[in-house]
Image (cartoon, rainbow, N blue to C red; front, side, top):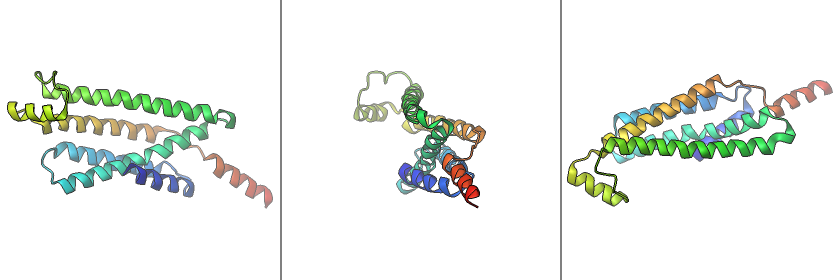
Length: 178
């Protein structure tokens, strides 16, 4: 899903002066999809679950080209490599932090007695024996993910939409040749 979302967003960015719009729509759909997933965790048929995951993936995918192009558009040509490297570094660092936060939310929702579990099979067996509701734990993780997507949505809406470097240069060269 994220590849499809990135492809759609990337193609639309060059075709419109308002390049944030596909990402705003995509993040809105991803946040709504994640909220629906949180509300219905454990009660969805597999096909609906997969459809929601595809919607969420496509929505999140729209974010990647926008952030890359926006960062590259905000710096001078001689700073492109450094800016892009920093973007990818902080994207990876943020992902690691978010995964650890979601893991903490999940483990906290499971409660005590699961701290010695090291595999998914052991977790499933322990949940079956003790009656731990895994869907309730995942529900909290999905709500945390929805909140993260809403924060991302707000940040993208607040981000300044500067004209893309290539579009501004094409407009300038076409006006000079007229």
